[in-house]
Length: 143
Image 1 (cartoon, rainbow, N blue to C red):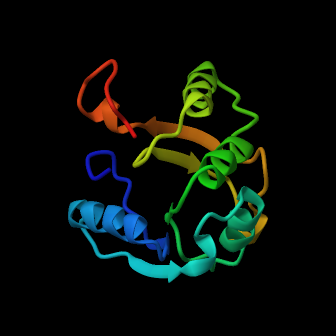
Image 2: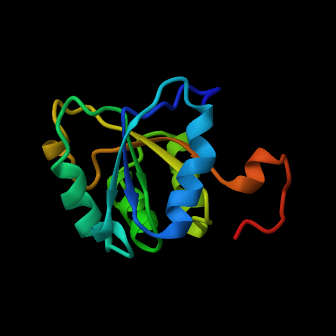
Image 3: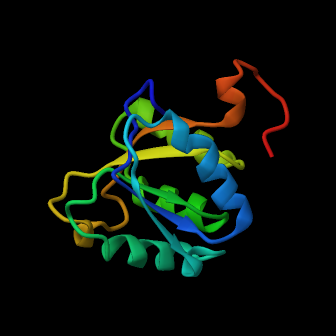
């Protein structure tokens, strides 16, 4: 994340122990210290609930990172990036739709002025990284 400049201003994180532990593992790679909001309502939330939560974030909190649970996060990423215009984006979306394992990272970009404008199909899936991609493996346990 650090190497690619994926440094959130704000992190919305589920209150589950596993999500908090995951966040604690990535915090040291950030150059700055993002604001963190732990939110119990993110626990096992469905994608429309996650989207509604994102829409309440202030416009100044960008980039935004959400640490939560599947299937909601996977479905949200797919819904937001459903209209992938380029072949590269469609390839990433296809990989994401096949499997969104624990600790995977989907990076979406939006041409919007405010988070309240986020809606399905507006996101560009600019990156998708699974844990096994970091190890340079073609397979392996990514659960």
